[in-house]
Length: 260
Image (cartoon, rainbow, N blue to C red):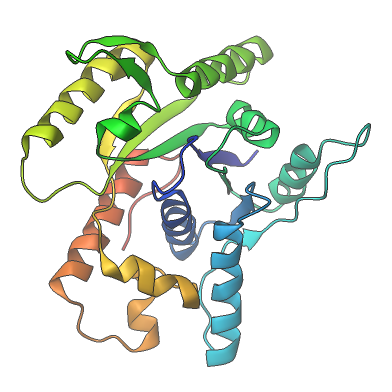
């Protein structure tokens, strides 16, 4: 069966679609068969990112390794479960399936979390986003898990009852500041404490870079720059590639050896 990677939280603007696109495309570039589903049926940022990629590659005559974008049928009352149908269709021909969840609580997102072998939760490095995971007192004491952390706990219980194995949960600290500021240290300390209580791993994600906003209209990733004629990478682009390399290594996915 395909290994299912879910990228999710219940807050927008944390870099879910950028993370989804770069992880899925990196796996495809390394020769793995990758399927993709965008569960945000309204905004569809991840789906449009992949569609932009296909259109750009066709227009420029390029052969860019690209995840297979699955189709999610409209949900009908009393009808079959559209998520299971879409995952089953991709499972026949993929090694990995990546599900990008919306930045809100939906039934599809809740179902996706129960399917996750690996769960990636991107968050901006601030206490505003930390509230996604846990409630905190004004003095900095952790009071208890948030509603999102409780949903992940519920998904873990359902998987356990079904004998589906554990969820490897990775919390990704996006938009990390370049300096060791006081707030950054406090967020890091709080995450370390919380990770031991509710069972996730913490990893650095992507820094804030202009390049990510520039790549979206053409559906490109950091790994495609040489394919479009960029001979000399800037220091920022090289650093961003290293962040992606570190992330793929940190995911510790089955059968994956970082080779870019």
